Image (tube, rainbow over all chains, first blue to last red; front, side, top):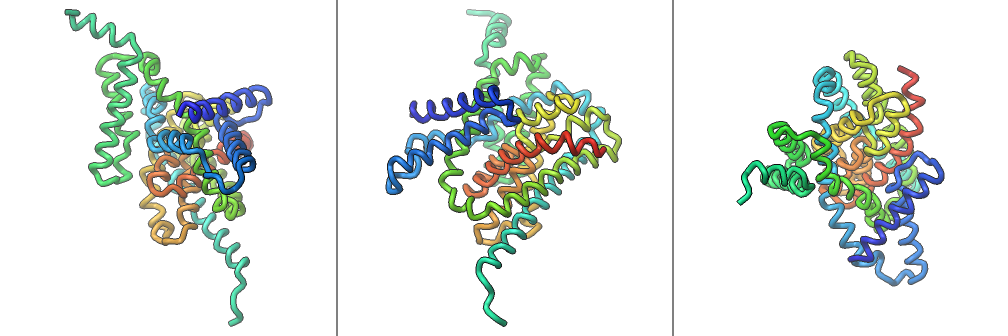
Length: 130
Length: 243
């Protein structure tokens, strides 16, 4: 449990340090994600493919954090009160833009993903002659 | 016994009150979400935010005081983002098989998110600074705020628009993906496509919702959130010159 938390914080810390040192336009935690991924790959390489995939405490801690991920956005969301005036002034364009853009983006991305995926898997498994 | 006034002074000076209030408001939102049979329109984040803004307004508490307590919850966003590596690692075979669809959907989705938001806002006559703050709304808060700052938007307004976008995404995703015929098919490709789209359009809140739907959807949403953050940081300063 302690080791799993330590692993997450160490990866984040290393990520933040790397971002500051190199000026890449990525937040530290995203780089930390990549580092943890590397650590898991390393662990498997050292222990061999028969070992359990992810250490159990890490599995538990990450499942705990991710199961209520949306709770973690509440404090930033309450910031809406700071901008009540500007949001009230532009409420119509903001509401329409947010809803239209989110709907269109989800639909377009999902359909494009699906179409490319289908086209590729068709090419991988050649069709029987008609 | 302490007088109620003094007790209130004590409580408002300790981070405990607003930390507890944040968890309580979310617990109410979550309970209502479950009561509604997991209906995505009954969104726990939206309910919690409305409740908290109501309480803060009534008690005359400013956001900075609130955030002193709530920052402990906010802080966990970092470790939680790192923790996304675990489901990503577990599903690596599935992810590797879909690298090409991911790359194409990412490019198309990222551009769509920025252009459609700024385009609609501009058509409806939003103030220029509001539009600039809106451009990076689909990506995770720290990146979006950085981008807004660089192009002349208001970073703290962007943070709010990011959360609102996430809430909208979490609300509409399931019925929307059903409508375009992507959710009822038992083939795994649909979890990947739908999840990836939710991560592109609605960052972490979309990812949280995707995890509720299916672990594989959540995994792809997490990847999309990370990659779109990166791409948006590069694309927005270029795209914004079109308007």
